Length: 425
Ligand code: SF4
Ligand code: SF4
Image (cartoon, rainbow, N blue to C red; front, side):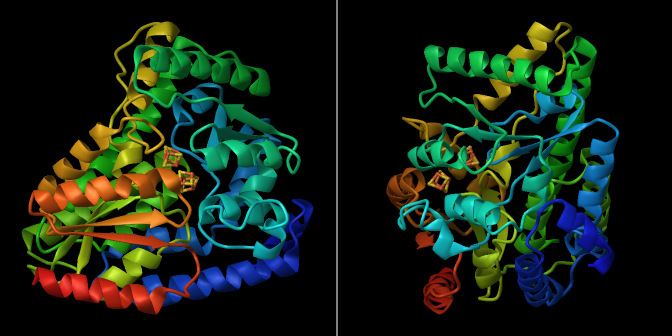
């Protein structure tokens, strides 16, 4: 990334030395993990470029938007409705939280046995290394798991602009009423932030823009059903990760370009790995940039990842928002309906998630499922046992992985994963 960005980073209050260290690790990791892959679709060049400019060009674009009066909203969860943010003429960016940073300092604020994702969100703030966080006019937290809920109480003393959204934990009528009330409160907060009223027209624009982005990803997911796999799990994961902070229209167009190329590859039976390579579905905790650990290990151990039942994947994007409503009230109701279907493990009971895993395994012709949990993530760890047991009882091999962002267990994980894949052959 060009040194020309240094004044911009400095103005955002980043710690330039720490930020250099982060970018070095990121660039090195990207080179080792992504650029070393064979047979990649040529259209992935766009995502290589996006990653090479992740703290550069995109930040400059966001700052240009801000200069024109547009507000930037940061979020940590797929429950934050982008439709409403866009309808208020603001931009939503995901705050990635996919790498350890400033761990020692983080443990002055959070217990050691907190999941890596929450620790990462603190580390990026305490270490002053995230330009997205620093340029956000509002940061939205959400009451999902207990860890996040309590962490936001502490986080509010580190940032001035935290807005916390309450969320239901049960998919009941009262639960849906709570979500509707919270989305309405968020609508008002967005209007207050931007000073722009949310109208039927602007909501329609928000719904159509986000639906187009999701529909492009659905097209990509469907192409991953093919054998040989036309794209690696790593590259598909990257597309999902970039969807959280790229310009939505440009992202949509870029994903369609990949899909066009993948269709040709499928017609020519050209894959990233040979036909009949064992196919793995990954299910569990979100894998935010630059968390590529599991995909890298699996895809260098003789298997290919064909789908992600994850918030950075199909759980986060699977349903479109009904766009047929004519009034703001009808459209808000459609948004609530769509988000209420997300099968996050914070819900109890959460049987729909299991149905979705089964459905995905069948659609993607998966030979096995790897359940991925971050250490200390109670919701997904608690669900991992029933998921594993049910799948195994139904004859689908399943492996439970519990890990963090460090590479300390990489060798041990590789040994377990290789043995698991060997059994699938
Ligand atoms: S796993 Fe739950 S809390 Fe995490 S991003 Fe997804 S919906 Fe939000
Ligand atoms: S990974 Fe688990 S513990 Fe961590 S924030 Fe997500 S749901 Fe909460």
